[in-house]
Length: 553
Image 1 (cartoon, rainbow, N blue to C red):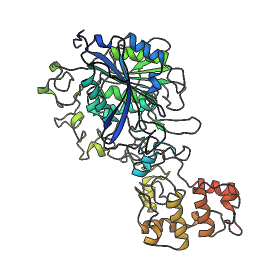
Image 2: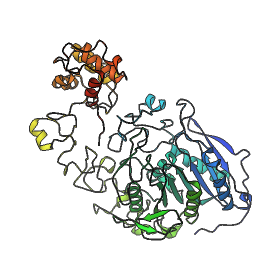
Image 3: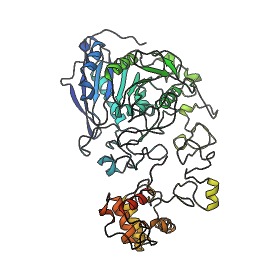
Image 4: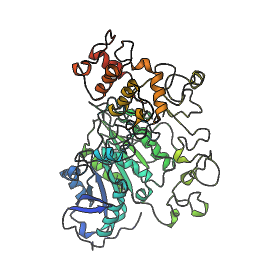
């Protein structure tokens, strides 16, 4: 433990508790709280507090109990503001973390059930085209200076201008702020500064678990609610993806057990399939996948019987105890990277890797090896970076394509699709039942792209006149011939009203109206063919809905 001197502080308070500073082209804001004895200490511990979606710098600091506890323990609190309330979004402040701005998993699949989840995309995401699906739900500002960059610069400013102990820097986030905490694993310039992190009711999106090759990680505390329907933790030792089940959203998250187990494994301890109970104050149930007491384990999973709420009176004291029992490891005894392995024998001397794992036995540890399994595919492009027999997982089911009998999860085996002449890697290509109105195959169905392509096709357009201005960015099917063939092969599917003919001013019009949100009489008025099998709005809506991607699970 580093020596903490009692020398007085020679860097006085900021004149105002609300501060503004520039990060790149964006003005960022934060609020600071000082304990009463701040000036008496040259080395004060610091906790950064990240608010939830729609919050601001006051969300935590307006809590009297939170300030009183921090004051009693001599802790400086800093609450920064996320982005979103100002131009160009003029909406909810948010923190952007892996998948939340693009709306897709690490393998390009949606992070939500787009058919059931409202479109929360920020204007900054639409303008920049960073959002790839309507599942995106946080800001897309400052991509050259991300929220992680902001936190790194904020810590640097505070260390330089305030009496802060560089070995006792902590990061805590709630809900959306808690989601961002897990990205520390992908940002060594931040993780190397922190003594510990904590997430309250915030989990990583599906596929964004802590990578096995993560740099030196600070200890992590996760507090979740067993009745939380927004970021559901799942059952103990359940490593399956969970799904939001509140009134309107269906987002996909990694479970609490999967999150803590991955962090534990990346921290270098051997992990099993069952977490061990750890002594904790009531009413908490805390468990860990690494051996040790509460003050020793690198990752701790604690749960309360509650919903999507903070329960500060319980969570804050536990969090401060977790934080203040930990100091950043540093010093020559631990080697350059602080993992206690001398540089002379460390297979990754600049990145902490206690276990020294070297999957491909090339003398370079997995933590610093760009191709950990030696299969010739870089880890950044490898869905299974430590399995030389697998590199792809087309349907994101965690079974590699080499072992998966149905790579696109469309219900037809790869062998059957090859025999049928269909594409075994496209869930929209099979002998029957795979048609979707996502014509350009960009994982969303829109009136001015897919709807327009259908109606142009039905009018007989071809070549550039078919596709001009009607293909989405990032579309997998973007050539005029490919689109024309796709629609020609599905001609019977385009007969929306079921009158045995596919026509632009009936079927094409019905599709565009539906995609624009029309319903009832406004959907079908003047657009139903003679002798149509489906002549009510309900029947038409049901027919189209069945051919709009519901989930890419």
